[in-house]
Amino acid sequence: MTPAAPQTPAPTPTPDRWTVDALEDTPHGPVARLERPDGSTVDVPARHLPDGVREGDLLAVQDGPDGVRFQALPDETRARRTQVQAKLDALNARQAPPTNEQGEIDL
Image (cartoon, rainbow, N blue to C red; front, side):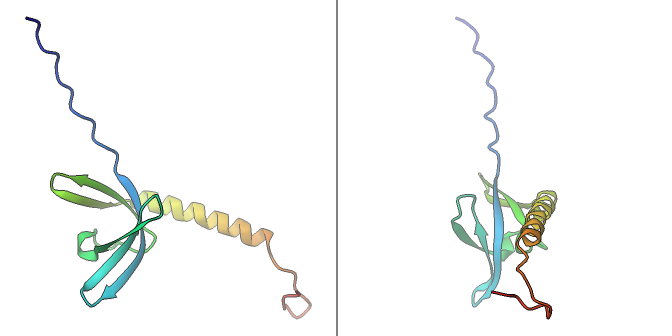
């Protein structure tokens, strides 16, 4: 009989990254609308999210034996906001509409 090969633990799946799309007060309490990577949205009671979460924040979302866990990702959120702002600034710089002497847009 040959000895059994050592068992390696199953790899921990990488958490999904979801975006806080909106925070709303409802008759049933505050709710967060979270956007998944595929663009679909899920409404979650805000009490399940980390304190201080704002619209546009990124969350690591991982399903586990104790339920779904949400973790704020402040560094990734900051990096994404900086990247998006740079793209917006570049678009605004390129697409400045022509104006007349009074600063009005000419069509």
